[in-house]
Length: 409
Ligand code: PLP
Image (cartoon, rainbow, N blue to C red; front, side, top):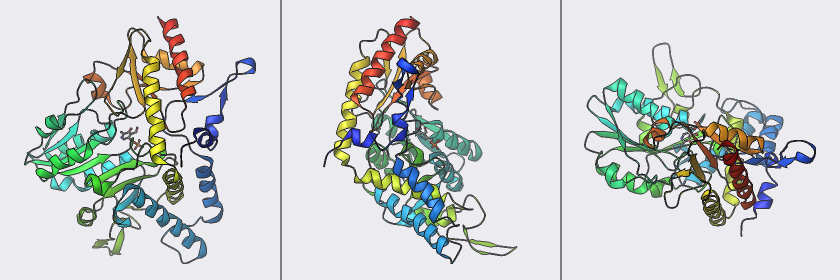
């Protein structure tokens, strides 16, 4: 097998969009996949087909459509289990996304955190993997410790280890940084946490589209990700949790589906994963997520990774000669995230000028305000790549960025 980027691009209708009119028509170049990925036609079709042919509430009916819907929903759970290398489907909880997955853990494990305990995160966390822990610490009288990030965007395991001690209950960190592209040494960080009896929560939002994690090999306790960043719709996400832990955890939301027996006096809980899926779940979204992951799984992943590595190298080289440009995050082995600052030019102005040339990048804080502050910045521009980007996209981006920076100077 190998990777044919043109064949893959042909599956994504949004990548065929153009901007401008008449002689000024040009292709839209999408370099904002870290915010959300585009969706292949087969995922869009699956979503519509589900509503056409299989729509009924899951787990509740004995009729044909209810059976189809339930099979589709549970089938997707099995695909997710396979993709993340979990042992049991009961370890896969469907949520709205990474943010909800992390809040679920923070709220259900919260009872184990006592005054005087601490939670360790890293300086490169997205607000989603920072604010829920900060809220928990404030509620329980615990302290939040933050492992520093180095100037090149790497995370030192030794400096992380200095913060973990016998009062550390949870270590929460990203698999891949959305602002720097750094791939964190998850297995080593897990080993540090384990040595001190702390649980690990890994934010995999940016990892899933680039490589398949293996939660057992990594040894993580919890792993969260969002469907919309991995070629699936919005509003569906996943929390993987180790079975023994989920079994022992209380529910977070109460309602239908998450119960075993209910009286006015008392309620007993359903086993995981249902215990954590109160109310009607996003079953159409889950089904479409399964379709997206199965598509990804069928690609030649090593070839995809090689393609993505070539893109990272190309974009890094392409922007290097631009006067005043500083790349934030140059960790070895980083994924396709190019966050940059151009001296004397506001990031929003760069974004606007690139947009006028049909190039979509993101500007702002990327939901990592403390991280940008660490680098002395309030806003940056970020071009982020996915497997469907090409060397031609990078060339056009480089040309447009050169033009924009000349105009703004
Ligand atoms: N964590 C990281 C690293 C992210 O990049 C994002 C989204 O940008 C999130 C968490 C939050 O994901 P969601 O908004 O889908 O819940």
